[in-house]
Image (cartoon, rainbow, N blue to C red; front, side, top):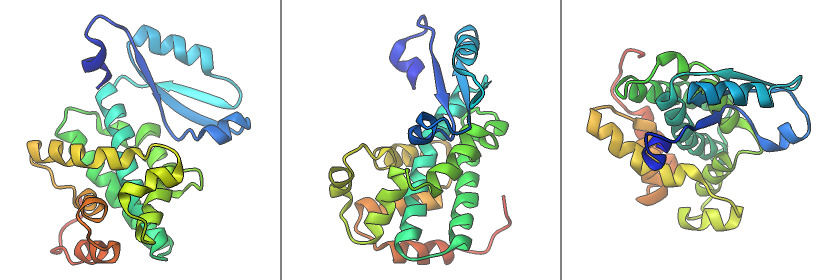
Length: 212
């Protein structure tokens, strides 16, 4: 995404991972990955690493960017589960199957599968789906409790990236022939007026399948 925006001659790097600003500002331990131009990534790593913040270089820029976009959509689903009053089992299932969706799309987009198991993937996904700081999780909860999706950002007072991302994510998945059932139901709840409880029923009623 950034390469397309900046062009081939501008060096850049992106920092990603489970990094809620509130906790980092408080000096709590955290870790991240930096990806992009290798020399610049190593400079960023050296500049921002410290006793409370550990940074790893990752050479899979496409995977890091995909994880950063897709995890917000899964966090909307996790928030809807919170709003419906579901417990840890449901959220763990959504996180795990959400990671599977992300990994499938990554595999068809030339990404490194290890990225999805790392800080930009699983790490950021867990934090975004569970944290009280997560605006995407909060937005999903609000939608499940009856707030229309087009009013959520105004009430939160911040951008809810998952709402802006989900349709583009689904379009990309369709283009490479990948199913994203959780993301499809997030879009249905946010934009098509489908009740979140019905979205869950649709997911749980899918044909039996092997885990992959």
